[in-house]
Length: 314
Ligand code: UDP
Ligand code: UDP
Image (cartoon, protein in one colour):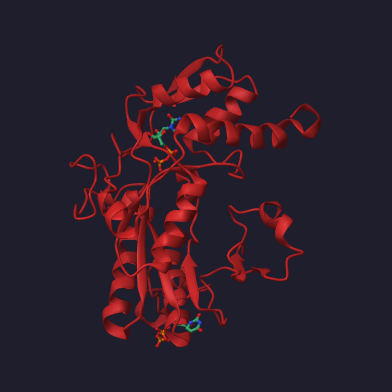
């Protein structure tokens, strides 16, 4: 909107909150529609940023069948047994497919937000876009990983088959203000725990790594990709890599040096390491992240503090 665009947000508010956009509601260039992308929708727009999908493992595992369906499958009642028909009762063509169908009808450019999870538990480090990944097809994370992989496939098939203009981003772990406080992901967990004087819950031995990107860097990356000439896929992430124990240390340094650490059993199939190679985005989009973790985290902490304790203690 700052660059004079009109923005229509489509959200079913499963993990989003109206509060996050409340400050835009009076802007004539802004609209929100409560809608679930597993249902078809008619709109007239020039560009579609398809971000719809729960991204926290806690959320996407909550209803894994809906996660994968809303990401990918064309479920036709006639083709499946009655067991599947129950699932199918609320959708026969879904999520990504609806957005691609919409883009095709109106000739809009379509940007898919895929994920670093397409690399699974990677055997190459850092991950380059040409790496095909190491995903467990039958694991508890598969609904998301395979869902996004197939969403990439569908996107490329619409590009090849229907001449649709498409863009694919693979987003690495991202954090920032307005994240759900009890989202279940590691940065929001540690920050909320430290503020509430609860122990920081480190899963497993805490030696697994992630690379954390501040939200404004991601937004710039997505817009550069949408406006640019290259399809991708592009890794969009911050190459600064941390073990979970190192992340806990940054949170202690930022919020409370006395915050305790409590070890918990890890979840199944947790990727051991993750770090984007962003050479392609640097060269072709002229993009790279600007905000290191130690600068971005305090901005998130200010927002979390306000939401947890109210304005008076912020
Ligand atoms: N679709 C939509 N909005 C539109 C156009 C299509 O939601 O403006 C949905 C439509 O319901 C369909 C899906 O996108 O289920 C795929 O559309 P497409 O035209 O590619 O496939 P078809 O309908 O021919 O199977
Ligand atoms: N994790 C952790 N404590 C938490 C939540 C997550 O140590 O309270 C770990 C988790 O095991 C994983 C990493 O943090 O290794 C990132 O998890 P997250 O759910 O944030 O995102 P993912 O990259 O797994 O999708």
